[in-house]
Length: 101
Figure 1: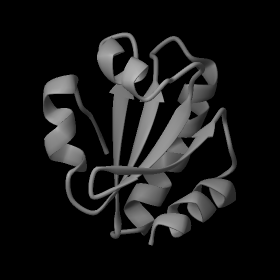
Figure 2: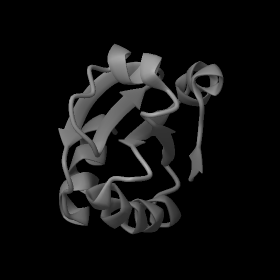
Figure 3: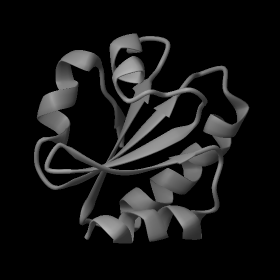
């Protein structure tokens, strides 16, 4: 799981199932969510998880209409499927991912 910037975004999400974590370094719930995403990333090889810092990537935050963080956006082959806003338990995140498979 890595942090990507706006220049890398299109290439990172163009193929397969990608979960994008829109976050900020100062966001407490974002920090709580990160270990859950790390677990999911290591358990499920069919999903790529990337992080986008909204403070450094305002264009992407606006494009995906990110109003609060953390927000998870699920994409398949670069196309929007679904989103979750706020801290959610691992089971809810895994259910979201299963909707894209």
